Image (cartoon, rainbow, N blue to C red; front, top):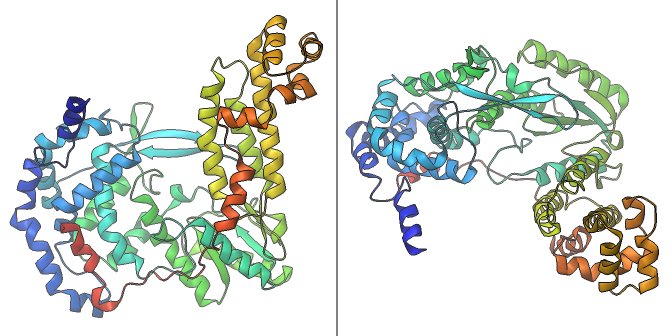
Length: 497
């Protein structure tokens, strides 16, 4: 085992033995000269509001930044792109081709690979198209994001919570709940149709150029926006949109929609935005309809985005959902019915009785789903709902276990081994009702009681919810992410450590 661990460690991209090529790149003048150049122009950058240093591309290609980028891509896992090179084999590739790759980026001669197109089902029907870049391009995009994020983060709106450091959905929901509790119980829920596919490249590049003065970096980002997408072996040219699924897309989407945030703030609206999902809170239906019409016109004419008028609504907060939750008139969070239905759909797929999996394996598949679902909805008031869900899941597992018995005698012996009286076990085993009806009988509950499920290791959501509520602190709704002026770009230099 020690030999295997040693071999695995040797193959990592960022260990000493594998970093010779990368260290040579990091010792180059065109890379190491970037921090000094940026530091010399900090005062000018702060006055003009732009990162004017031409060495930003050098910071992107620096050893420390690329090291952090690859480690993040490796943690995210993911599949290979159109070149079929998985994350695990990128280390060997980079050790040979690292110098050439950095040279091409610094000289402006690097052209990204095409993006592999993958479709996944949407929760409310239809399909969502994802773009999977190659591992090489994912590392470069992650490196760009790490440099650009601290520059743009300081100017993002306080009402934006999606894909930002130290911000999460819980904070967005708490702020939305405070608006409703304050009397703004009419919600204008805007739905942007295929937002990631409709982003205007010219407007996005214009926004980027207002903060970034490094033309090589701007050209590289533009090439990523215009890189083709591989569909059925055909490389299609993309003239708008950002591929959803790349490391750079969340930051670019926030840059595009920050213009919307500033417009809403200028108009004095109370709103919360999480990525492309945002809601505006007003006091009357009439005001909501007026806001809905004006913001729809702004998104269409100014930002060149499409609004889904069928899904965009203006109604009371309890009649719509935000981030999977429903907000009652007193500001209390509850779990939306659609979120419960999606969970049940996943549970049904895992506990399907003809899968041919052991009960222990089914439980091991269910546990991370239930734990993650509860961790997301822990701020909601859902004690009774979780008890009902736990009971429903236990019955699904009882049904699964009885079906595994297959024969009458096997079921009778299993029930008897679990403490059911002989004559009672024969009654259930000889019953002609279906498996679901059998799982609800007293004999099944006696044989597979709560202690049996505890030994089995099933995740109990209602019990863990009680533990969460005891130690739970309400999420902070006012998070300051503005960097002080004197250290505004200091985080850019830490990537060399």
